[in-house]
Length: 100
Image (tube, rainbow, N blue to C red; front, side, top):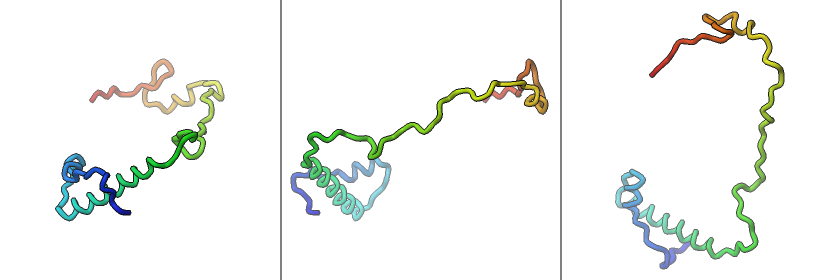
């Protein structure tokens, strides 16, 4: 892909500083050319006629796969659950207080 002279020049050292990466001179040149190609391709995509095409977020429709959150059985007697509890009070588990 040839570089378009209308495409703005990338300030690769500044972008590297924003990304918190260090680049040597060879990498600056290489990444600068790659960024130029990316921007030139995006400019080329702007020429595509998209009139009448609805914007999409996903290529396929997305549906909720979760079931409705409804109780299935009545709660029942808590005694079987509480019989192995080290401590209990008022039909509840008693746990140690943890404050950090």
